[in-house]
Length: 557
Image 1 (cartoon, rainbow, N blue to C red):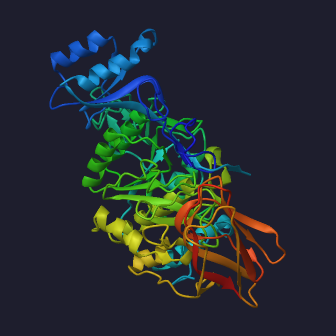
Image 2 (spheres, rainbow, N blue to C red):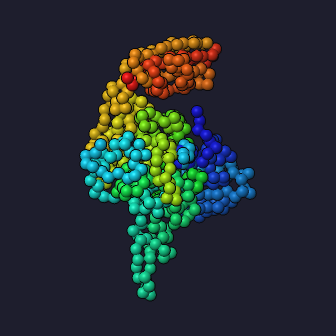
Image 3 (spheres, one colour):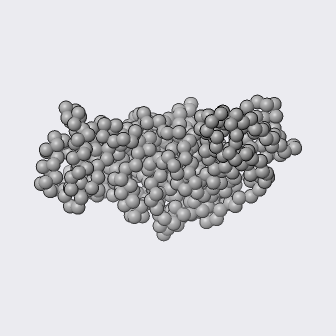
């Protein structure tokens, strides 16, 4: 099913989902973008070329050149009175020998779902640790028990901002050393670099002490939505006897804001935010937002980021789509050093919203009912791949703090190779597993076993429909296991005529528990209470397909 194209780039958490959209006037793809705005990539060294200036002037557009490192890009804005000629203006740029490509100034959004009101040595716990099931799930306590942090890696939270005065975030809030401290000016006056109105470190930003706000173009990246603060708390909530605890207690949080109070932001500002984090030498970029429009410019930027030794962690998205065939960006850019994260619940089952991808989504992490910091000093439960992403970003920072000599590519490989393997995740994610932070530090993985730690025991079993199934089919199979308290099925392959036919799963009381209508390999059904599941394939008079093949089931006995 296609993503909802009425949304902008948004966060991938429980408030909303990341989705790119575009201007239909000039592009066929149904992705949203800022009206009348496009990003162009110039060929060669054309930034002061008079021919390019003449082209802009002849087309009647205004031009912004906001990027520092990525100065090969410009943003052109078509005035409202010339929007009727938008298609021809875009065509002129495409046909120009001066321009390599042009694309919309896409809109992005957060990747949340909806608002929601044993260690090697003893480790002191903060008061709300009991509410943080995700930390227990990924064995964070065990990891802290063996951790010996040598450095303080910087994680840039590229999001809605961060409440950097929050009781659980203030201690680990990054401060720009070039804009901090005092000095005596030529007149003998004591000056504070944080408020002197001078770009002391020469990075092009004045008084960027805590980071930068690209949404409002200011030096205050405070969070007016709460989403970025929630992600920051998951990554590096202070272990200070107050509130919650973060995965990486010694990491620093760089606040880089490009999404507004509604969770939406533009391609232009997303690139600016990414460029800033790169210039300021963050180690990890945490991106809990996205969209479904491919940007050549953003791919170019992220490729440069990873070449500079930075790890790029991104939320896979919340549309319950297969990212291998319906990609979500930036998570789906096939760039070495990008880690895409799906969301699982307390049972290590996929959440109902998470995107997956056998090739394009690397691992999962807790993303359902996650308790963390929020804006204005508060705390909140939230769900989404927005919450899964910072678990992995925090884990990367914790590993780097223990082994600072690792490259970003080595950290990415360790994240994927150290997972807890789970049957429910096999064939759905490239690693087939869920983040385990203790394994990560110890450089090992938890193998796939017949009886996993959650109590599920796997049994090989075979049942299948005719291939293809006939028209007007009413095919039933019964899968039972004496004494089972719960049972779930593994479909090796499932293919039905979408929106026409379906496979109904019923419990022992003949109550419908799930209806499957999709084309997919390697799928687990939802657990059913009791010892049996009836599988019933129903079809109409046309559009027959493969049907199903079951190759096993798991039970809790």
